[in-house]
Image (cartoon, rainbow, N blue to C red; front, side, top):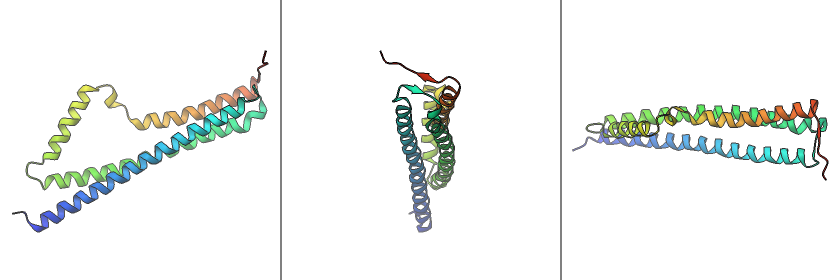
Amino acid sequence: MPDQHDSTLRDAHWKMYSENSIQARHHETQRAAVASTFIGISGAVIAFMTSDKTLSPLDLPPALLLVLLGMFGAVFSAKQYERIQLHTRRARGYRDAYDALLPGSPLRSIRRIADDDNTREFPKLSVLRLNQFWIAMNLAISGLGVCLVIVALFFPIRVIAP
């Protein structure tokens, strides 16, 4: 018969595991929402800049906005990743403590098998970190802004419609 202390401890570990998993997902959702918003804003800024079929020094403020937006997005994404890692590490610790209370530690075995299968099926993709893509996407927005600043300042464009 299980000891009441073991049962209480298992419940506490599981509850803390669940709470930290929820927090990690929350940060991931925030990161996705901000990235989506920034992509939308960037598209609107580019549409605004090119609506008059020119790219000139008058377009510097919106181009600089893209640079700042991308930089902020990259830093925000990195911070969210840090928070995700914190809650994931905590969740992993609680899960492992919970697993240690179970006979034979079945969760560790299941996790190890799934991890190995995934690495075998996706050997190249499994080494890439999703966070790198989020940051790169935001830096691309910033880089586009830098390119538009350069063009607006040094190579202004005026498209004459036929």
